[in-house]
Length: 72
Image (tube, rainbow, N blue to C red):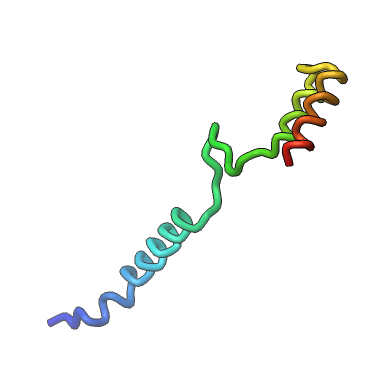
């Protein structure tokens, strides 16, 4: 007759550890979802990026910057 109470401290115990690590990895590993912004960007930062990319001229940048700063 087998004593099944000792059975869970064999290979089954290792599988419980593996499942625990796997679940911890799924729920607690930080990751980013593509195409989703994590936080709202600052309007001035967006303006600087547009200027750096060449989408707007220096005059447009300066004018927009004054408007953004005066709104704050």
